[in-house]
Length: 267
Image (cartoon, rainbow, N blue to C red; front, side, top):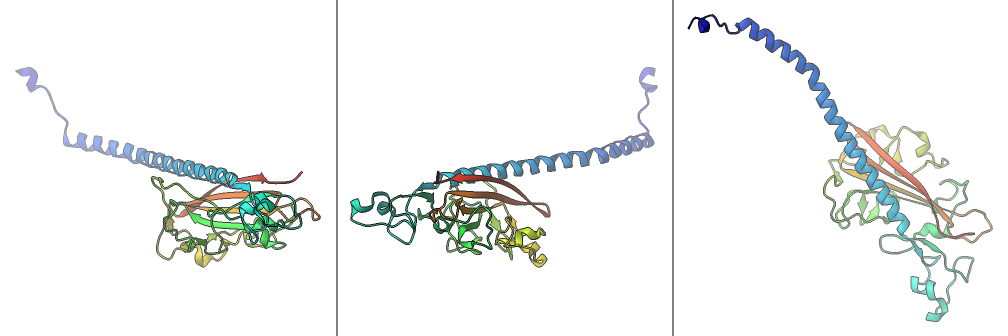
């Protein structure tokens, strides 16, 4: 029995000292765990944006089909079969060839197909060669606050992209007073004489909060129709394509972009 009588427990002071030491260790460790969790979240969002960007680019490439040169004349059948269907058909300044080009979500040729700009020209030189749409990452058929009657609110153009109806999460959702613009302090993006210009950008700081007041992802698709030389037919020979995906994390908007050149016609 004397063995048990000689055993001593921890004093209150010792317990307080031990707890203080543990709290100090935890105070240093907790930010590490929080920071690690934030990095994982940011990496996840970045990977999703990357997948959206590459999916969008591949989708655009798949919309490059053979169709008529002028969307105001004839139909795709007329363009493909011409006089065999009893209709004469004129393709711009070439009346015997049928050129490929991109089509919108309804299967209609983009108007930029017949107004290509030259490689050195900007939006200021030939705005008819530029296609730009800002749309939310939402399943096709779901209401998108970036569009009005399915048309871009800034350019009045139809989207070229349809996203799957099976999007699991991170669907675009606008919050109060959302404005479908992209804030930037890069003056080149708001200058029509610059190659980086896009009508969706704004440098109005008063709109900064409204432009980022959303959840999920939004996608900017910019396509420029081009031909190599002035004396060639007025039909696109290749497209300069930029896809840029935006998302908000914390109080900051992030983006991921991919660019490509899509060939359509030309020797």
